[in-house]
Image (tube, rainbow, N blue to C red):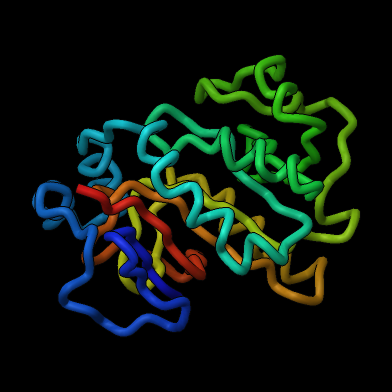
Length: 227
């Protein structure tokens, strides 16, 4: 797993990460708010207070890193989240997926359980017409017939959201276990594990994220780290 930030041309390598005391992006304010809250719920509440500014500006600055990434370049079947208010905007990456002729899948959550499918998106323009969930994000309707990724060949790459991440690849989600459960289903339905890549603000990088035995690590975390 690797944690990579942007600082000129200095990028952290895509190999299993060892502890690096000089890791860029471990924001002191975020650590002060998140540090000392030992439970996932406490850490989740602390990170929710961290101001995340320049969502669209930030992603435009380092979008070229995402689309130039070797895993992105070679992947044909890609899952990507539709952003909530406190997450990196993914609109431009979604547009690039379609420009390159790749197949795009987006999450469809079932809020009565921790079940999530990745279903095919027809076009970037379709997003605005999709119904909104209680989380105020667009997603295809639960009863709408859509191609599901795991029943039609699986996925090569999964872009993952989260509230916080640490140097070991641990991820703090929103407490429902959607992605952890889905990744275990991937192991059952496809031969090769999809590569997982998280998109984060530098304020979301912490020294340690509390986890349990059900949590699945992220292969790589990308975050914007420009003054």
